[in-house]
Amino acid sequence: MTTHTLELKNLTKRMKNKTIVDDLSFSVREGEIFGLLGPNGAGKTTTIRMIVGLISITDGDVLINGDNIRGNYEKAMERVGAIVENPQLYDYMSGYKNLMQYARIMPDVTKERIDEVIELVDLKYAIHDKVKTYSLGMRQRLGVAQALLHKPNVLILDEPTNGLDPQGIYDLRNYLRLLANNGTSVVVSSHMLAEMQMMCDRVAIIQHGKLVRIDEITNQEDEADVKVHFLIEGDISQAKQVIVKMNDGLAVTESGNELIVEASDVRFIAELNKQLVLAGVLVVGIQRKTKTLEERFLEMTRKGGDVSEVAVPVNE
Amino acid sequence: MKWLSLLTNEWIKIFSRVRTWIFLALPIIIIIGVAVYDKVTTDEEVNNNWKQELTQTTNDDKKALEEAKKNGDDAFYIEMLETNIKQNEYAIANNISPYETTTWQFMKDMAPISSLIGLFVIVVASDIVSSEFAKGTIKMLLIRPYSRWKILLSKFLATLGFAFVMWLVVIVATWLVGGLAYGFGGMDQSYLIVTEDQQVKERLIVEYVFANIGVEFIELTALVALSFMISTLFMSNSVAIGVAMFTLFAGNTIVMLLATKDWIVYTLFANMDLSVLIDGQNQLIKDLTLPFSISVLAVYTAVMLAITFTVFQKRDVKA
Image 1 (tube, chains in turn purple, red):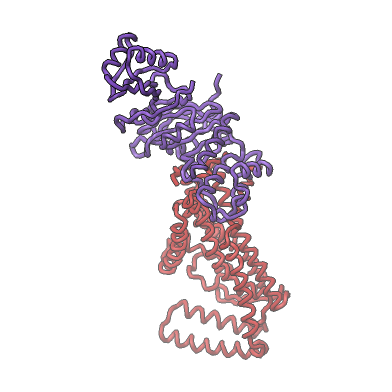
Image 2 (image 1 turned 180 degrees about the vertical axis):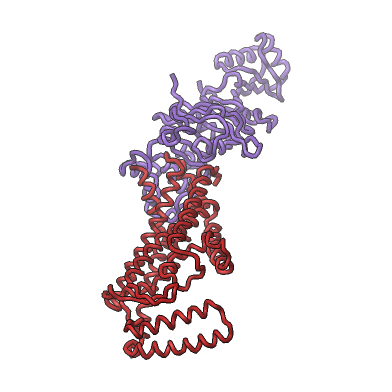
């Protein structure tokens, strides 16, 4: 049975008759990276703020490790680490003193643990400098450090890659994966689609405060969304007829000099290729393409129209 | 007790700021400055012939009093002159020199420095909550496993602690500087007051000094509660400091303008200067007594804290 570390039940936030988060429910599993994806103003940050108790809940519940934050806030927050928007730190203190602020008030943070976390975010060289001298990336890393100090099993990061350089984003992604593999549930929010796709196991798409759908992101893409493009030299409609004749009921469409077939099985793709070649059709290229999260997202949120599909390598 | 760590944190935050040390150093520098200036400029001759000096002053005061009565001057001014004359005549008759300075006299003279401390306490108190909102650090603090009221209480107690420590440091510094400059004796030294029924009475200076130390703690508590409330209501620290300063300034001015109104005794600011009530001399509002003012301050403090905690508990943090 999967354990859920974070559960949202019909979470709703209304302000002045405006519903910002509308009946939102989802559960985050132990050891997964869960993304909240939505355009700006969709209610991601409001949701996160409700989860960590920064703003009041109009309706619904948030359960963290089984404890309801509305009734048992202190217990529920014990194993939560979070960065809400940018990590704001005390500029007039050193990085180390900033960490000490949180180390002191969280349960079981040893001196060794502090050093370990500093090592981890690679800030050892500047940890005794005043935070006002830090770059945005360094602040972000110190923010991550404070969120991890007490070994939380629920880590919540709002727009964590803001202000990070590509190397920083890459490191963060790897580190979050490491944490998740060790059983930490990570919740990240972002409006950056590609980033979410690379980072998350599942992504909840939110729009107008409502949950649109939850997508599993796997290396093996959603079978129904995979299409094969055959690049044909010569008569395209003839090629189409070959395929239709030999494969009853298979969806085949033409697009320019490409024949698009809904198929994902590699052997079947090879079979189709053989049929074409044997029928004398010149096949100059085969490409297996999948719908990206981006396209699905845009489709869902009805913002974009026809977006060209992005190639993924055939690697089975 | 993990909760005490919240208090430690706040304390560390206060003392990590450079301004805190300036606030502590400034009164001490002023105290030393006053003592040195006094030592350098005081004419020993005058001190030794203080009776002549005082007789001269009394005669001048009498002339001024006649003049004032003739012109129909302000009653407050006339009363002040009368009190001075009575005091000085009593001093001459009973051989009590007002010029004899010991560390206790010095502490009594330096008592107004408490208003400077009040000013610094306002800055710290009105900043302690609002700056966390302004900088956004409040988010990092509120997502910890502590109820909001605990976090706010730790801030209140830290500010109060800072105010008290500052006051104690200044008291000790004044005593030390005064002692080094004028000698540590004088525990039995008296000063003169004129009571309501125009009687001159002797009082121990030490008594006044300790009474003043005591009432200042009460004043500081009310002042911290007021600034702290403003700090919580306003989410920008510069606005909060400004509003707190303005409130205090405007409050005092309004009390001065409306001192004769009956209801003024129930306002906060009419009761904010307790030290003047120790002797009951030159009181701006006649009806006030120490127990009454302390009671009024207690009620205001309780109400202000209730507002502060209620607002803080319910606020949606969007910083």
